[in-house]
Image (cartoon, rainbow, N blue to C red):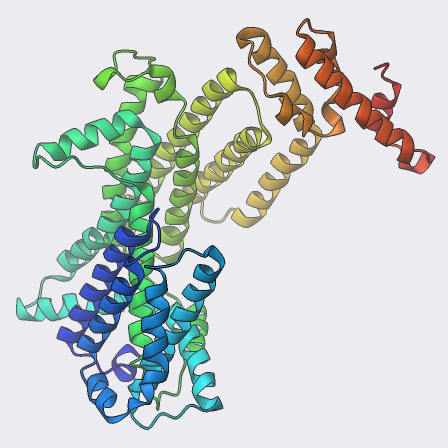
Length: 499
């Protein structure tokens, strides 16, 4: 689908669309992220409808000429107002789905004054809805590029290198905001220094809730797709799904200078984060700002760090696959930047493992926490393969990654996770006198040899509770476990226990 042939937007229209999409994304986040649905629903729907009418003035003319739109607009108004009055959770859920359908139907209906409510209308509605999901993601960068190129023409054109650097900086802004939001969630010291840095320029206390940018960006792109779907020319021979196939089959090349600029920006942020980690976490520096507690500081943020390693892996994959490799000098620079990113990502993995270890020493093991350790080991192997692949491009990367997955996953099945959890939690109990008996009871029979030790401790409450649990489990087995071909090692061990 050709952007220029299939849309009738001028440069000013494109600016309005980007601005309105972003504004609606911000309002959506402000109204709905972790907030109750109330009068915000009719207000947001009203703002959305007015904004789209502002982009498509001809829709207003169609409204006046065809009052049949009331079949959609009246239900939109009445159903949206119910959120400001009533609180039936099931009706609210269904009403949100219905309102999305009605709003889409409303705009599609008034798009053309000759529209009629027939089967073709609803087929078109389904196609447009599917298109709108993908269009925003496909055309966000082409639209931004058109706007920037228009500015370049007005400024008598920047050099090719400067344009690529500027594009890299522009793309880096949302990426860095997302990464910083995750880093500040992962490390309270990094959050403290980030706030202090921004406080030098403003009295506003800066905070980076990690969900905010995701919500704003994703919803803004979805709104963008919704608007674009309303303007796709009817005589277009292609559709969005065809476009996706074309994109899949075509060879996309991103200028290496643009990628270099993005990687430099990311590596600078990660380097600062790593310095903070070495200064406080690994060094065990208890002289923390704002009277922070070191144990709490050390035990928070491992899931954010693991998520960051996944993002870094995606950045590496996209950069290495789609970068323009024609310039050997820039390609060598990219290899160094890839290597630095991998080394800094190794620090994140180690930091996540270090924090998880501190957490488990205090609170015991769970399946999720052990799973995180296995995931960290796997990602360390994958990063090592990527590091080698940077400098030796002919190695079978996919094959080695598949082997790595099996090397981690198969042993994970054999280490007896539930036994390790029970064993560790009993050790934590001996040190802290704290144990989650209800969680231990949820573990499989594989853990019961370890749990049997709790029937020997002095605490009568824990002793009796675990004894009853094991007796119940044993009785269940005695009723069902009576054929030789049902043999299982840990089941047979439990059957032999004298409880």
